[in-house]
Length: 197
Image (spheres, rainbow, N blue to C red):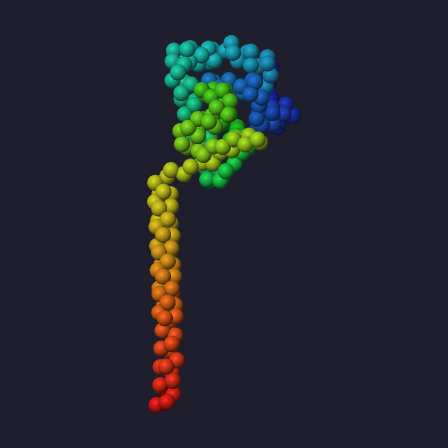
């Protein structure tokens, strides 16, 4: 059978279908292959490359799962920090933004079964501040970058210094008011003496 031309309707259709995200149900994380339907997935599972990947997984499943978990965590936090910074955001919104990337690591390949478990883990590890509301889980990334911590410390020091300056100015003003309040009787006498002279 001849190979289809690049501009043939079938080739264009195949490229359009391959562009978008596919159903998670027909995705093989080990091979990083997305299939369009059940038949394609079944054929993929019997292929030599898939069987080879599954043998590798069977030799050391913990290391493979740990690798995917680390990659998922790193990429999720990177996406969260770039898109939202340290702002509080609905966890599901952050997750939807993360999975919009076609080449993301799927959560079903990690040690976390649900987004809730992953969010709780982020809170326990101190990488995010986490709180649960009636609407769901909210997360905020905690910036632990040394440069950012140094900037924050410098800002805090400047605020304290400004506050000290304000307090010093306020104390000085109060002292002057007291001094002028205690010397109100002496002031008219001084002006009266200058007028009389």
